[in-house]
Image (cartoon, rainbow over all chains, first blue to last red; front, side, top):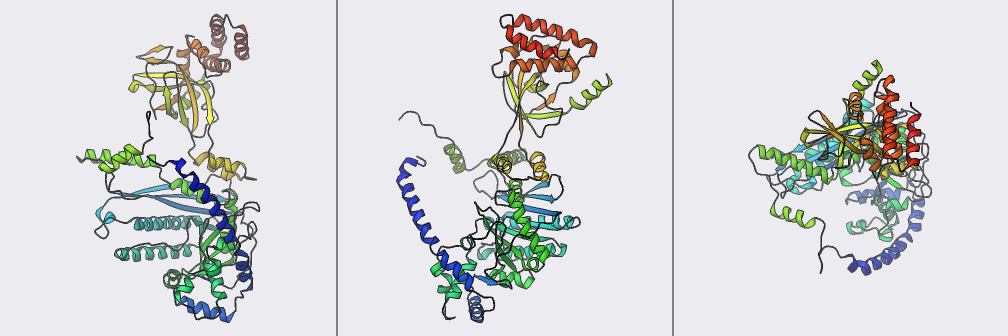
Length: 396
Length: 208
């Protein structure tokens, strides 16, 4: 029958009122959170002691740096000339119901030469994976999480190549539409691949560092609560807490860091914090690639847009590079309605539409036919193609 | 004449777009950023049909530059730097849609003024007619009736622009006679609509 919207109208109305009242409840917790943030001082020995104990319990909060945690920093001046590059990737996952088992990664990139009145350089590179070792790394079909990880490393490698050339002409900022802590939601069976990919990712970050370009991972509408976890830790009366207490946000439940920093004025950024996640401290830190982050308002006074910007510590330690990430994100967001223009364009260059996917399947089908193989979708996929088309109902 | 020849060499052999959709009465093709000289309202263009057996000749009657949400968002941006404008114009593939009225076709070296037996198909290349193509096609004026009968084109402007193109394709000494003959054919076709006739004649007189 499909989705009968008329049967949902009551539920939708109820949902509207529920969401509104929940939102008001959550907002009411904000003043306390902001007041706590103001109370924290960086050299508080009690807090340091708590953080040390929490870190031993896999706490995923935010560790203050030398900047006061409640400080705000105005947007620095953007250099007259800078190269701003971004890369993004999209993928077609292996489909056992499709005409053949394969996967595809398409990487789009853009190099924007700020200060020159010329069109940016745009590229996209598709790669098709169909060999046994690509598809069955552990004798079972590659999971989507591993495809995602390979897509992420491809994006970073693309930026590393761009950096090598672009730094010769002007300060260069590389941007990714994601955080810099690679998410590897892999199963135990993929441990070896996970290690390889993470190793390659960290090596590529080091390669970027050696070019003297800077890199920033930009997250729109972030759900993270690292700084709120710091506030929760501060509120605890002593350091006798356990893992379960650490996991909850207590009085700040359902709040996010984005809400906490919602008072930033256009262009302003928050203080920098270290992401305390075990992945960062146990894997990135030993390789010299510790990730830190800040929040920035890339929107306007009327429509604030709080973005989370993740940078390696070596970027944060160089004032010019830190300024370029800050000013670069804000300047680019001026022309992307609060989100960096280059990230919107790199996504556009990478995305594979359903129509394009259909054309690729036709090409693959023809190639298989020429090789004497039949190329048909499964009966289930065929049935879906038939039934998912627009419904036509004749009479009653 | 050397100028005319060089123009022909430059513009006629290069495809200016690819077919998007078509029917018997006309077709629409898409192209990227338009060059200053191509395509123009009133230009004669040609498209292959019937797997190359025929070549349809048409006249451009509308050029539409589409927008999208991304472009709309940028319109509101203050002090938009040139690089963003160049990116949108040169790199983003937003096709410019060019609508063409079919007015005839060539088949086995014969030129027929009338609707073609089959429209061109999707993704076929569209080329601008060479000056000699335009001269050959417009030696007979039956296509004017097709334009006059079309419902969705700005008839008076289109006939004026097409006749100016056809006139300029000819050597200077032939242009006046060509326009005079076209005027006579229009007077015959529009004997019951003197205001429209007058409006078109004023448009082509400017160029005599």
